[in-house]
Image (cartoon, rainbow, N blue to C red; front, top):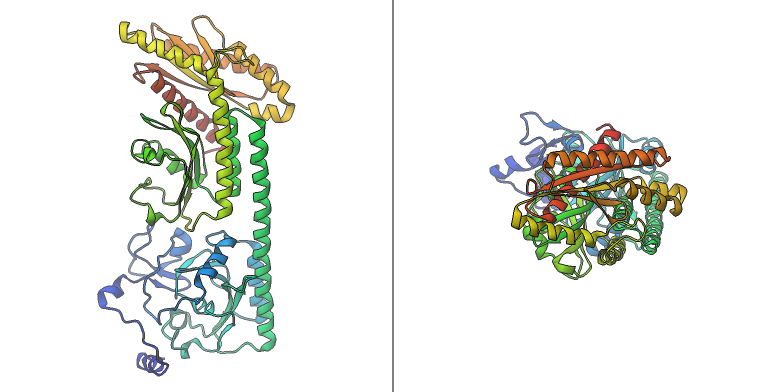
Length: 558
């Protein structure tokens, strides 16, 4: 259809087309099902002279909603708030392809003899394609109005168009002018409450209309998709109930803080779409990551958080009794500058405990490139996880108050703090430094799970016995974490090597007893690495954690 005829058709229908100034048209995103020219593509930059193919799919860029160079603006559904709430419950946006959805889309193309079929979910600003057959669009997010499905969700009735080129809403659409598609049929995906979540749509280059039997087939396939959504939701709810029970059981076990944190974070990452999470300690000097977990896409955030302004600027501002859940990035971009490699899509911050002696702890979690609110069931799970960690922190505080560890006979954390304080006072007088080592015994939980608590306790006692040496003082800090203090060495580097030799020998002794464990050591010296004991302890822990990551990456072949 020529441009004058299109305009005449639109005018006859009483539709005022969107008009664009030349400067706006140069910047607008032009989208077809296979071609994207996008100045918003953070991976590719400005568009090339030729269309950049599969930009959305290859670069995983969420194209922001903005005016489109065709058709008319799509009005919002009358029940938009309820519809969006129902859609959010299913947590299907931005999820990877699933065979159950692909199978139904394939079946639609085969049974109805059409070229294309897609499963689309429509939120306030975009259309997310969960599955697509006949066109490589699965996983893409297109602005509202980019495809006819934005109109199909306005009612619970199917949208049937025999010829898109004669419809004033779509006659200028790239589907029509570029791909030469004509027939469109969109069957709404209805939630149990009647809300329209999206569509199962089919398209074909032939001008045709689905007959009553074909419409019934499409309606039945759409109902199967809704059933699949309900199954996903019930499965997720069951998994969350099990996760909550696992947290209750974990809290009752009263494990050391490090073990508790490791299990809690692993459980949260298995249940929620997290990129990074961490148990953070905030002191007047700044922020320390006590324990954290990162997925591949969260590695940049893990490294960047230690160098960010969180500890000195943002951390103290967030110390408070109430959890904080931040959803879309635009609402908090200024307050939470992320590393350049990462693009947070949401943050949760849950304070832990009362902050004894000016030291506060918090559970922090980050989602990357995933918009949407933290759902009530997600918040419930995170708050239970915070309760579990708070209980472990309380137990740790009780252990610190005692002078020695009852299981191993070594001095406890409180004794180490006192020893470091005395060493710092003496150094202020005579200038003598010291070397501090922090050891993490890996594999304790495996021994506990495989052989029971009796063998695990024997392992801890034997490791403690192996750490005793002349000129050194050994401490048990928490669970499988130990410390070694070497006061006033003549040569700090020699003392550090002595600590490494001692720890390697202790681990070897455990291997000879049949325990599949390994020990990671981090060493820091005063004044070479830190001016005082608290800083040396943090530095030693960081180096020990780095050593653990190196071993983990080596095992994974990174």
